[in-house]
Image (cartoon, rainbow, N blue to C red):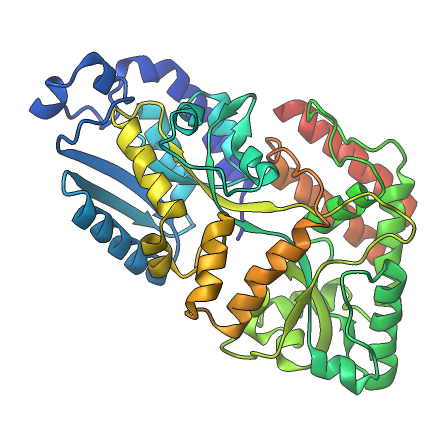
Length: 454
């Protein structure tokens, strides 16, 4: 999904306003009911739940399918918690954070907010989000079945500002039929970058098809994996600069892809631009015109309606390195507005959303792989999952053994950093500069972006 600089700029300005306006704004946009006026000081602070009638305002982004089943979840929760009703505010992705920024500025954010990894740091730094740790400590939200590294992705500067809802990890999707046509063995989690390159080149040589048919520099996720595999960090600890010391790390990455493009084993930028117009289900790997692509681990499930034979594997390893480059990425979070007067009730709903069989029977992993290992086991045993979904769930358990610590949430200005990385790499792919020059340019541009925003 496209995340524009315009949105981040608007967000930063509006969220800064929220800090100054929060003291004179109410959590329900200025509307005070008689029931709220009668609450005790504890309830007004949003830390108590008495069973009195409450309305939870909740917002999320997604398509119509997500809107429909989320409403069913809200109805189911109200059926078992008759004192709780919801004011739902569903939205598409476009415009979601523009509206949320305006609400933050006016102190009228909904009680429960679906939050993205790209934006959570900005909202947390401007004190728009409540610390959920109090509700973990008192048992309202059960996190005992959630991987600690994944849980920590919602922790910003010592505060749990987001409860992770789902997980994903970087993967390589592949078409087994294309690999078989090329006489190539299907990869497993022990494969190396040399194996990857040989596979891509062999597919091109034997079949004339792309060995690797994705875009390696759409963002910095794959490069971040590469950096972590080499025992380095993409960003400095204070997020004000690039974290690795030697630009050879970047130039080697760019050179590897430039070489594959030169041999026709991977699409050059112009060819890839044409591929992007085909949509997810029209990509070469799905249609049988390519062997591999880098994606998140739920890709095979997403396109199973068009091709249910695709498989996923963890990305290649660096030969001889014990560094764990892989990480569990949070799919999204639920956050609670700092201005909310019903924080306790909001936390109770979040716990139900994450940990109940009832909720997950309705959701069916549409938001991503559930973060609770107990729920994952339940869903697999229930027999309700498709074969691809069951494989995806099992893959999470296998991938955890290869995962290191999850990186901190993206720094402010991340969309600009991604764009500068793509532009530098494309300059090398087009032959306008060497990979070494491209690596130096990326460092210079990224350092300027990071120092300005963090």
